[in-house]
Image (tube, rainbow, N blue to C red; front, side, top):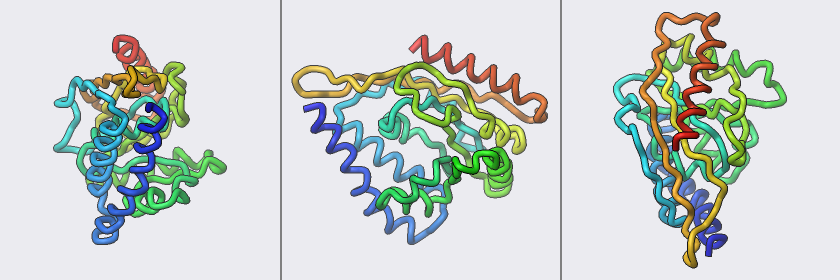
Length: 232
């Protein structure tokens, strides 16, 4: 049953993206399309998986100003775990290969998300700095998995610098979204997925910081996130 639940959850993603294309084509590159679609995808996915997602600190997510959200990245199923936590007018960061996924890739591009080419990773920081201008000019928020790749539940990996450059350059606060480590386990005969609790920490202000502050800021965020995940 667990395998069937997972199959249905992932089949629902391109189906929902296909229907969402109507909205994205009606108002292309409107960043709030991403929040609406991600909310539907996450809640439908969790329902099909039979997954509970206890949440703490929802009030800590800024909704009246842009923020740079960083979250730990464990599995593809993170889409169902945290997808409905995007603040208003949020764009995300993904690798260029995502664009070729049927329906999902098209809405990802039409959502105005930041697309990085890993083969040209030396330009990633420059892309993030350019994104910081959009945060200020267009009042967009940015969602980033700073580890850059899935950890498969093996603990928090080293952070990449791009998200922190964007936060410092724009002066936007950093909001940490921490999900407990999980291993794709199912419970009971019905194949329900194990619960994955999530905690949102209070924003970390970056106003007045410079690039010289980024190493300390990264270390502080990594330590806070690692401690919170361990506590969960």
